[in-house]
Length: 516
Image (cartoon, rainbow, N blue to C red; front, side, top):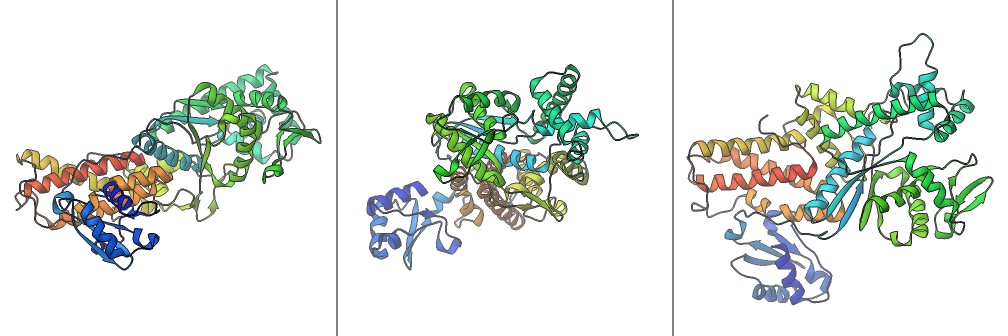
């Protein structure tokens, strides 16, 4: 309905930039526009024009409140219909890169944040018409690998055998003391010049990647493309060396002078002749184009590297002019605990998998509930905001949690099962004269999804579903559905809630259980 109102406003007031949106309070209608305000016209006169352009079968009344015009939908229009999601990205091919863990290190909670946000954004693109390919870029070479392998070769005397994550943590703690040896080992790994080191490398890489796949399965993610720094590094080196018009030598290294473009200088090949993360990003840009076809490439990553990304993107656009405007990023905040930001360089790191395991145990073995709790907590605020995770609150059934939404869905499904067993003929023949808050809310589902997809902000869906769950629970507590005055319509309305909750939770990547 919003689109029809927008078309009417455009016809009545052409050339004016306005918005049509849901008012904050129900007493102000189902939709409202600021067109009279921004167009500097008489709102009464504009509302009269709109009355002539909009069907009374769909709009019951139009009211003026100051400079705003409010629209109240008709009773018939408020009866639930299966909604069509606007196809904002129809025909677009979008590659979404997210998660990006590093083999030989733990899958820390930063990777968990990236995965949850990236998966939801990918699903929002898909339901909005895009052909989405999921990509995962993993750092399987670099000094962190050398630290892990060094830790395996030189474990603490008399201690137990170290896992790869533990070996990395130990190697990192010893780096300053054994810097020369670890840096030499790093070069050996790049050169593949030592068979014993290569065997350790192959073992650690395979174990890490297998373990990551288990976590992806738990989180409901399946990637199409896997890119690795061991592949992007050599390509990046070649790209940098073959574009002296973009890069220049400086004190034995090769750099990109970003100041010419309002940015800053970054090293792409270090003084040891090895590619930096920046050079690898150029190799990644080339590999993405070689292996996948896309109109947009979007990277989901932490906001602490936003300035780094700007430099890399500019260098990539100079090297690959066809990528200009097609490399985007969505920067997310950190998951914070009372002790502050977590880092995989600390021995007390809380890993993504340990968070899932601990919450699953608290949820009496219900992994689907634990995953739902985590995903809701990570998606209920704006993407760029930091998150403080409270395990106890995350599992609450009292509202503002993933399990609260899951329980509302389970309740709706249970009611539908009972209706089928009772032989209720679902329909609209006994439509109540007055619409409920639930019906007023259901109208806005597609609007919430459209905004979330357009702005790459899943929290609009999370907020909407939380409000819908509260309205459904309130309605359910007050209404006698089966055997009630409006049982056919009550079941019809419940089906609309079940359909909306199920699709909305799926967009967030939150499991949709049958029972709880």
